[in-house]
View 1 (cartoon, one colour):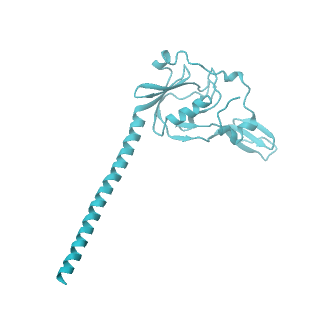
View 2 (cartoon, helix red, strand yellow):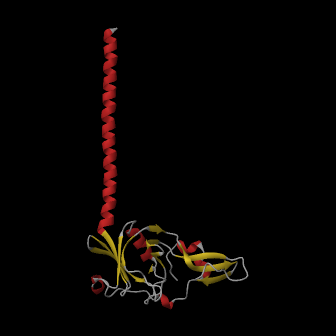
Length: 223
């Protein structure tokens, strides 16, 4: 009886010893995974920055000092300037509509507006904000998004990127990425000197039916 009790106690001791070491090794692995993830995220946010040149109307993305993306853009027009300074990305959304300007819709009657607080007479009207696909917000109400890129300042302060460039930019940045916006940068004299620009001002405005539909978010704008 004494030997049997000793054997059971030994088995119990081995079981708990095994459980203890298994718990320690599992905890260590979990901690390694967590710290590795945080380290990766912090590296991206510190090493990758975005520069926006207002005079050259160009966006540059740099990683460890090397330009990995450059594209023409359109910035804020007179009376609605794009803010200058240092910012960080605070939000991203593939589907975003403006709360400041858009369209009043009543059946097939679609009217552009920059005053969504006041509907036209003869309601009921539905307000549908201007589509801003691949939205990357760097300050409240200001962000990068897809849209027609003109050779002259045209926006209400946001930064428009053309077609697939907006999608590529969206995928290159993350929440916390640093944004620098200034009149000019050294890159304007090198990689940005002969930047090929679209001439979207020569195109007709996108059809209103397109602008109020989900189609505006489904593929790059090519008209």
